[in-house]
Image (cartoon, rainbow, N blue to C red; front, top):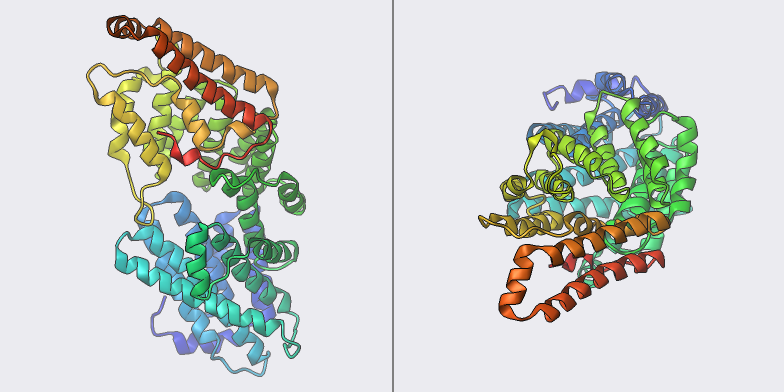
Length: 491
């Protein structure tokens, strides 16, 4: 969008006050949250060359889409659009006009610029794997953080001017400083000490409080603040093994958004996730299905629901239904095909040997394909993909030894046992699956032959019992809400 029209754009922007720009962007955001994605972009598009907020929100929507599609073209387009938005912010900060407070416009331009920098850094890490790109992304992150830090000090000073648009400025700064503090607090202590020495701060409680301020205020960044908090409370704490989330906080944050956007796909998804965490699996399934029905424009929202539906049916031991959603993901989503194919194979392996496989697929062939879908994000292979590939190696042999309970292993990796800990019948079902797997192992002809030939039958049986006991202990620990901090170390 940088096409030599900078001067004209700067002149035209004076025709629309800062308040008018913010009001129109709020309307566009309302459209987006009500699933009118195309209409939202159409409302923003005419002013993306002249209004910093139109440019920023437009680029943010494209970035969200790129993050979900994971298509290289979408990522590149979002990056170029965000770069153009950054240039609009730079121009806007230099405009002198008698129609509105020039100082206030400059502050808004700076916070928009910092947000552009941060989002461009995220796209850089996602798009490129080389060290040069990583360093460039790191520089963008640091520049963004320094701007946010300076602006935060400024708005907290007694001399700060507060106009009608101050709530949007404050919301933008709360989002930036809050996001940095919360994200950095999740780093290992050794790395966090180095980052703090470099001038960053990683105070989790402070970050949560700032994001909460931003989420509960009626400002342009309230949605972003709320989404980051919801991700933290309902996903990150589980995936990282740092806690059991906070359902009460998630529900408190969701309540006003659900009232305002009752059919909003994003909020239906998080409502489903909170029910899932509470162990209300059937209620969660209904909400995820509603999320899919609510809109058809962005299939990527469906993929988020498919992933959760896959796990919901896993908890219910409905292996074929879980396979169905893993199959949909393997066909439609680019995020982690290795994981999706592995899960397809895992679900098929849980079925009785003589039971017909959906679509005539064979789990052995699927397991053998898993390594071919390996990918890197920000230069690294996701830990779950590494785990799946390592487990799938067992099937390389002409006569592979079957994995006993691959679904339960992966469920443990994603901290899924905490989801069923509130439902004794689901826990007992998993115990039954483990008992059946133990019996199958002991009755295996190959197992008997090896044991008899080596004369170590009693020792092997003890080892099998020990393995089942360890898995059972994990389930029991879940019933007492014990954290799973070591789940990444399964061999």
